[in-house]
Image (cartoon, rainbow, N blue to C red; front, side, top):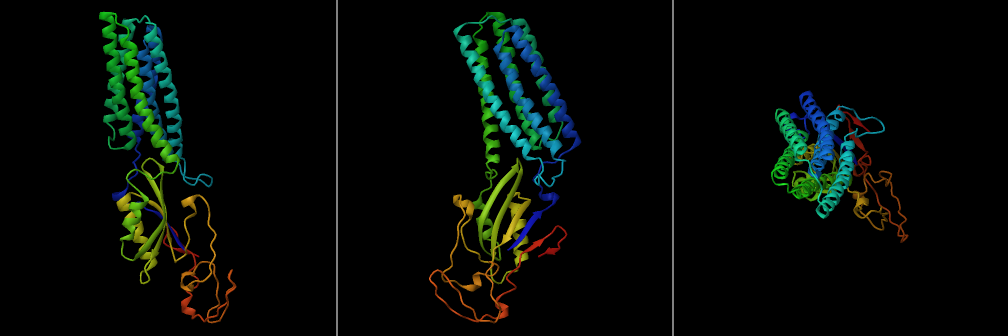
Length: 371
């Protein structure tokens, strides 16, 4: 089999987010603002007795986590892979996202429990401190949104952090409204009601984060990409006789990888087929890193298809399909095969029929070959 690892740097086809110092700095400033005021809001909630402020601080935690993940992604994106971590550290971002989602579910449970307790026993709330902290939170969120919109709004991490900040802005508006209602009417149930609404906002973010991170950790196919679609697209390429053993997954958000076997047609040149496959994967599916194995006719199912490897016995077979399968013959000499049925047969082979057993050929990044 010929194996090719495609590492392309075509700027006009790049799907990976671009890391810039400006983006990184804006994310870090926003993270410091959000994390600092999150602590202030928790303190304000404890002093005023407002669960809504504490819940809004929990929602700010989702913003801080999103910004922290974006910052980590920027930092780790510059770290090269090493001998122990051949894919680098990009997957750490996904692991952190999964842990963050679990933490958010715990916060949601606590908020709902406290809200239920306050529905049962009304709690005294100091409207003045609550209003002051809520207004300050609103100002911080507006400042963060302004900072992020001045960055690269198309960057996946910047866009995600911006959406989180907008969601938290709504929570701050609600806290301001609840404080005004309590100040003028004394109706304190508005506080746990708002807390439940904020908890539902956090639940939505936590569920999406949990689902996305777990999908990547389980090596799920990237959104909009499937093995079936890849098989259909590549199978229609000139010179391709068949495509099988297609596996596609994400290293991290926005970075798709794939491995597959491609069988060239008899008259096709293998390297041209390989190049066409790599171009199609990059252009149609955004897969810049692919391992394409040229399939010379080895049969068998993929061991990953049903979770176990298969052994194969050959009772009667066409020798043209065994080139490169470790089935050695001496060219031009008759030979016999002992199969399970102990049936023997002899036949002659021309040297040209065995093209040097189709040796394994790998192309390196300089275009050279190793055998």
